[in-house]
Length: 394
Image (tube, rainbow, N blue to C red; front, side, top):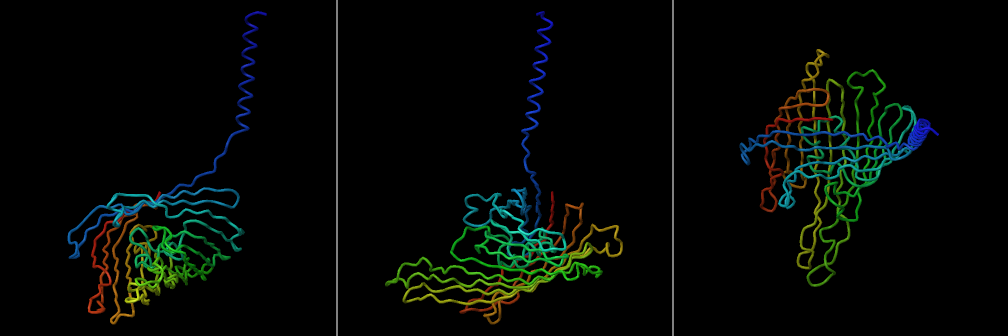
């Protein structure tokens, strides 16, 4: 056999091997599920003008939320949202006062009822997920300027660990959201055995009409039933120094209604919320028994965001004016009741569809000062602050 024929045979054999390997590789290609990554950054410059911290100012990155979504099999998906924030609470900031990462949302979602837009659809979720109404209200109020009214007032957290179901009504008529969570919020581990059921109905009765800006009108009654453990749940057995453990839960209930519109030219909303709870005083001893104390309060809030030039010229929609007022009664059992207000006012400019910058003024001031057992109660520390806010969605 000549050298030429040997070389030809070797080349042909190599070609066959490479072709076979290529075909085998094509048959065994692994397809990875797509990952949907998004996020938002809240940053600001703030300048205090109240007497408690007059002229104090700083640049701050308030929040950076990073969200990952991806499918997890047929009808199932996951969502993970990390909350990047600056540690400011003692004693945590004594260890590290910079920015840290924690989970806000981390849940599996299963679409157990699917259909057309004219049918009921429903999903179930388990993990760290949305509480009853805060996330829904953020569809109307710009969260990057301030927390929503009920969250800022400390009624409950925006996320918690538990299970939930979201049912969408036919013909865009609204949704029903039910959830049971641990109770303390996503920033804390579960401290007791009690769970907090919550329910919201959001109705959009004019969504299929020609009602103009009121086509987007939504009304959302909601309820939150909570319990927390007694501070004496781990007290020692009955004896000369203790009356024994108290295993009952203390009430931590909230209910309210939110209503709003979200037209491209104007967004507005209003909230009424009532909250009641129990606490215990005393030392849980024979000489100083535990005493359960009831407290009740309520919240009124209203806001408006308007694009003034868009009302007369739809070609320019970047300028926005915003105003909000909250009135919080901390405890109606006082005489007079403890009350404070929140005011937010300013303007912002949309740099593009995903980024904006604002100049706004915010104050939180006490209105009444009840006297309890000879001690004057201050419902809230006074703050007056000018802000330059920035938001960037990506």
